[in-house]
Length: 297
Image 1: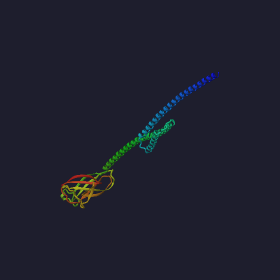
Image 2: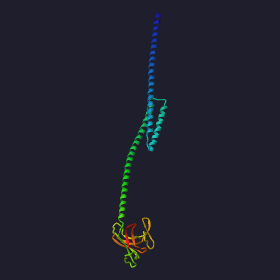
Image 3: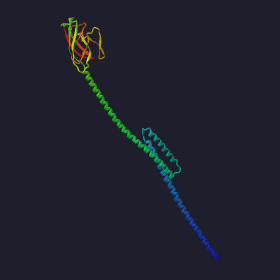
Image 4: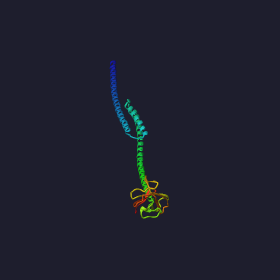
């Protein structure tokens, strides 16, 4: 009886051990499966984080390229772009040297990259605004230059017109000498028909009326060119200025011109009077106002 009990207890004990072994085996299998799933999940996470880090690296590199491609003539914006370029370089270096890459790390870098992109976007917007303003100013400048050119042309045209008018007035204000005659006189101031009998000459003419000229005293110069082609000089050998040249005159006289016809007679008291053709020239106000060829017998 006792032996039977011992045998039964031995059988129960063997069954218990066998059950434990099975449980332990099952636990080992489950633990192995869980470990495999865990390590596979960790490996997949690492791959995903590596992909995210590579993506971030590319995004940062693209941002650096974008900053480098921005060209602007504004010194302030150029300085700020240089600062942001330095921050992007630092962010890229830190990301490439990061040993522990996890979700928190990726989010931190994404946040910094987002800040850099926002700042760069604002700078690009400022550059676009400046470019728009510069284009508007350039168009306005072109318009103003055209207006200035147009006004200058108008001013030049007005000045030219004024100059032409002034020249016309100047020419129109010249007093003309008409009805010029040359008379031979003896010592008693009587006319003679022969030049060989003459002691002096008288030049008679009329200063024409002209409302455009200034009234007042005038000096009139007469040049008498004899048949030999030489000017018959005045007694003192004096000269007057005509167009920058000092030329000899035969006789001169002052008159009071009042814009009306004025008859004038001027006497030449020199020698050398002979028969022949004489050229008489009359000058006043710097102009030659009349001339005539006259025959003396």
